[in-house]
Length: 607
Image 1 (cartoon, one colour):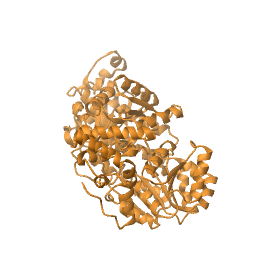
Image 2 (cartoon, helix red, strand yellow; image 1 turned 90 degrees about the vertical axis):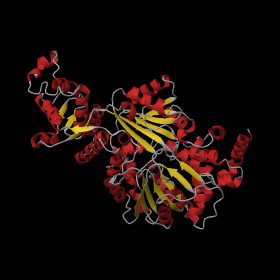
Image 3 (cartoon, one colour; image 1 turned 45 degrees about the vertical axis):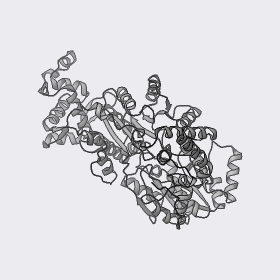
Image 4 (cartoon, helix red, strand yellow; image 1 turned 120 degrees about the vertical axis):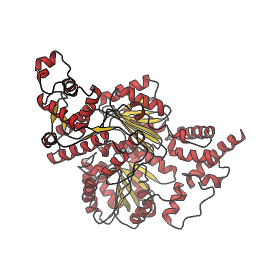
């Protein structure tokens, strides 16, 4: 860690990075992207969440003449981004429907007079005739399309207004356009480039890996008990997000977590707008808050100290999963991701796909993407390898996921799969896992006799495995797309691949029933455990940060990130020069807060 002031950088971009942001050097391809866009080039940028995408358009906006126009999908988060930039001494503003007419007029006037560096707008606002007319009069440094996967119908969060951003290429062809996302597979990336007409620009594809995140996936037993154990064991004092599939489940889960002694808030599209905004602001500005939410919450969330993300039900694909888990550990410190996985969840997701208004080709793609997610759930190998392979990236076994730390046992599941598929076929493909398991193990009851299934050749042929083991077999066969579940009644049917498997007598290895529930959900303890500096000084620094944040009505991380406070509590700077060398302490923040935090350190050392 540097202990002295860095020499002034010769490169203008690096000078801004060091003076304004307080960072020593660019990471990965950041420097290349900034150089290319500053020179007027178009770019497509894919970096993992927390990889520093925002610098790729913020610094060129500061270096180029005019105002940078940042297109962001969620109005509710713009002000937090603007507040963070203002703390750095950057002239930033937003224009959206939550603002008064006077505030909008004032910002537009500042744009016309060249008094502003960056303006955040939603795509709907940018596409309005009056805003486009304003842009015709204002020097524009660049257009940054954030969360660019929203452009693509093959992406996981398509938004029609994003598709219309193609007009930027026709109307402002000479102004650089930079599209940025953290999660897009190869077809989605190409669709974004085609739609935004970035073919002549450069594509910067950084690695997808977030090595600080520990991944765990556990088969559903009692989802509440599993999530509660995970939070209590690892994150009792942390902020986190719990994702649920339905609004009803969100509210029930939030109430239950509150009853368990946690500070939990609900968030879903059915809540009144003011309640959603209030809950979101509390999550951003307070500590030790758990947000229980549907996928309506999270895009663009810039809270760096989210220590865990838990899914009580599976998301719709790997892109959505990776984006949602990427909201943890944006500060680079250790974080956990837990997903609870059940076969019925897969059936519900398939039903959502079938009931959507998407064309058949898109439905096929969505089914394929869901299959990839189910394969991640049932893999016997490294979770991170499966995720990165999906995005065209690669990794060696990571040692930081549940399957690396406690490898699951496997067995030759060929005969078991044949038995399971046969019982589905002979019971006319309309019964669920529980009943089919009873047929296989030979359990007789009134229903079994009424249907005559106790007379089938498959009755009792699976007595060599227990109920939990057969449930694991069925779950994997669904994941391998050999069986499909109907969401309304949970009945299983053979897919075309399942019929081919029976005909061709292929071999298959399966994982044994998950008996690793305790280990698979423990994850990795919160970042505070890994901190090696002065704990009592860190607490004092956090208290001071919270006081400043409350006084200014901004989230604590807008003052300083946890990583910055960790460095202070380790280095214990006693001069402004040493404070300036701390990660994340730029010139503006040094002027505002340097003396305040030096005083905290000095008082601690004195005591």
